[in-house]
Structure formats: structure tokens, C-alpha cells
Length: 398
Image (cartoon, rainbow, N blue to C red; front, side, top):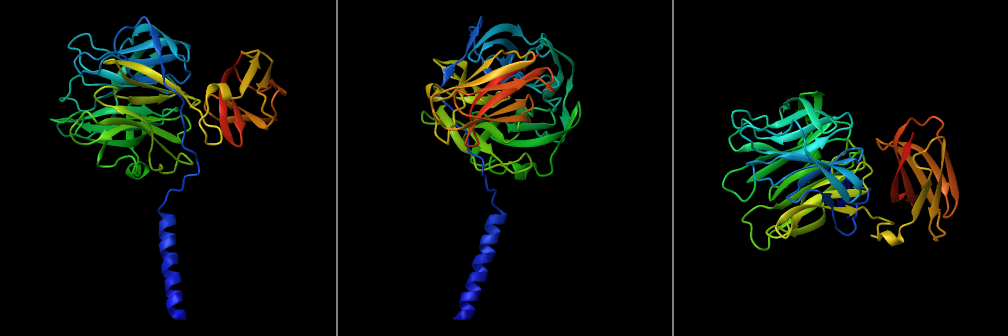
């Protein structure tokens, strides 16, 4: 009997070791977002789809109706979080002769601009383009090359998302034939070799194993600035019916070298009426933009990130920071405006998300931040409670 018990314990130990060694244990919480808010683009009366918010938050890039016939890229300038002013076409990205599909914009922090174009397809399979962005113009344009394309008829690179520093490309291959939307898809990740070439990571399939489920069509990947959260759109394979839904999902991980968790569905809509898709996140991860149908017209929407102790809260319940003066010259004062007596901390981050300083604080206390060795530019002031972000604000240092 003792021998049988020993054998049982050994067997259980082997099983548990196997389970824990093959499970990506995720300590990070899944994000939560508040109510949907429609974005106003003043001066625009047509469809707006597949948004991308610039790293500094100043511009919203998007395309008109993605019909593949005359799909063009545009941009708008920020007035506030939910209001932008339409500027016009993104010069250099659209074709004047024989217009086709030009869509799905992205931009890294060094102003490398990327977009999808079907010009000369299928004579040219490398249909992701790159260029240098400045003041509404894209120049030095060329095709982006790499081993992440699938060189078979019907396959295109449908969507993509560039990492904040421009070193990683999250790509989406899709096959189109007689199917509702793409027939099949693959999301992968490639690393930058030079300005015109990316090479697929050898462990790309392992990193995204939880995303690329064969029963779903997955697309529109968007990676956050810290590379810990990947957002994307999916819907089930098969015929599109009145009950078919599109879902915006997120997968998370503890470090940029980990594989991703199982997906969490953030929200969903019926495909035939409200079709929701194409998320993009601000650098501080506090706002998500995406598009959906509103009375048959595609509009850009937004939601604020809202997590306090894992519980979704509304804006009224959130503690607020008063930052003055902002922009900062030599010193700025931060005050927590909230009646709650619990302790908070304030974290100052640079534009890349790197922690510069941490301050302990309680509500209604004032904290002075001095310029000292801070370089001029954009910073984020994050209010933390119990190691979770409660609110995030921008600080300009002159």
C-alpha cells in the first residue's frame, strides 16, 4: 500500500509539474473600459474607419469606407479626447491614378509611418508600405519587405500594428475568396531589421497561440506602448447571420518577452447592424478608440479605461489630480482632489512609459515636482491606489 501511495504522489507531482511548466500564469489584471462615447470629427460627414491615435495623442489617422475601390487615408487634429478637427488627406499615401485600397495607418515614436495598400497587387505581394511622416505628409515611401507575407493567391497583409518604439510589427495575414470577409487569418509578430525589412520572430506562433484559434477570424492587432496588452477584433468562422457578433478582445502578459494569456472579450456588437472593430490605444493606455456602425455609417468611438481594485467605476467616483501650472517651467504642484482618506501614490512617467519618480500622497495633500533633470517634452502623471492605476494625466515640461 505504501508503494502504491508513493507511486500516486510521484504521478501527481509529474502531472502538476507539467501543468505549471506549460501554463502562462498571468498576474496582470485584464483592463476594463467605461461607457462608449462617439468621437466628433468636425468637418467630416462620411465614413471614418480603422483609427490610429498618434503616439503624442495630437492626431487621429483613419480611412474612409473600406470598400477596396477608392479607400483613402485621412487625418484629424485633436481638440480634446472626444473631439478632433478634420484636416484632410494624408499626403503621399493615396493614389491619384487607378485608386485602390489605402488604409490601416500606424506610426512609431520616430515618425516611421506604415499603411496597407493594394496597388499593383497581385503582381506585388508585399502590400505593406512605409514612409517618413511630418506635418500631414508621408515621404520616402517604399514597400516593407520580410518573411511574414504568404505568397499564395488570395492572401494579403490585411492589418498591422507597430510597436511604440517601432521595433516590432504585429501583422495580420488574411486569405480572401468566396467568404464573408476573410476566409482565414493569422496574426504574427516580426522584428525590425532595417527601415524596409522586418523578420518574423522564431517563436511568433507560441507568443500568439491563444489568439490564433482556428474557429475564429482574428484581425486588427494593436499593441500597447508597454507591450503588455494586445487588442484585436474577431468573429466566428462560417456564414454571417443576423445573430453573428464581432468582438474586441485583449490578451495580456507580465513582460514583453512572455507569451500572451487567454483572450478576454471586452465588448461585442452584432455584425449586420453595429459592427465594432479596429481598436487603438493612447500611449498611456487610458483611452481606446475604435470604429462601429451608427445607423449604417461607420463612426469612430472611444472609451476611458476604468479600473479601481478590479471594479469598474465611473468618472464621478474617480479621484482627480489638479496639476498647476501645466506646462511646467521650473516647478508644478499636484493636488489630489477627492474626499477619500485612503492613501494614494503618484508616479511620474516619461513618454515611453518609463517610471521617473514616485511620490507617496494622501488626498488633499500637495506635492511639488521640480524640473531638475527632466528634459523638455511630454510626461504622464499617474495616480495609483493599491498598485493599480486610478487615473492618468499629461504633463508638459518646457
